[in-house]
Length: 212
Image 1 (cartoon, helix red, strand yellow):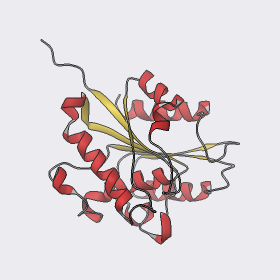
Image 2 (cartoon, helix red, strand yellow):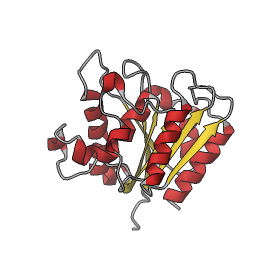
Image 3 (cartoon, helix red, strand yellow):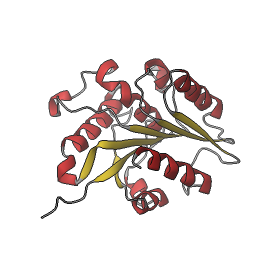
Image 4 (cartoon, one colour):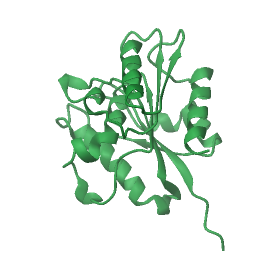
């Protein structure tokens, strides 16, 4: 009999200032339904909050989630070489650190899957908190020429995190010749649910580029 089909997967990381939030919200969102309609599997991650465990516990939790999904990709019928990390706000900060984790942030819980990388094959960040909490390491500190393709979306009326920082990050990636795109969501604030049509279109096109 033929091999069962395997699916590319979007791994979502929620926001909440590293102190609150619930992974279940994404599983009941329009984003989940949209991604499923494109033929992508979805996973939503939970991490320990700052009041529960000191940094970098939340970062380590996300790395372990990605390693677990890649290690068991066959069981979940996922493509291990097409895992796209998506994050919003604080979650955007956490996913933006993943590409450098195998090098710069080693020593978390690699014994769970020591030979399996937590590096995503692409990144999607919504209004990301790129500089991290409490002056901890941020994406600006760890980007390099081998960074995966990245899509950053940010509302022009975001009063929590400014779009200019996202633009600077994308420009830094582009200066390193990393395929990176910036999408400004005109008139939108910090939240992206329900998703504006231009955000849906940008994510659809980006995912098609990665898994075309």
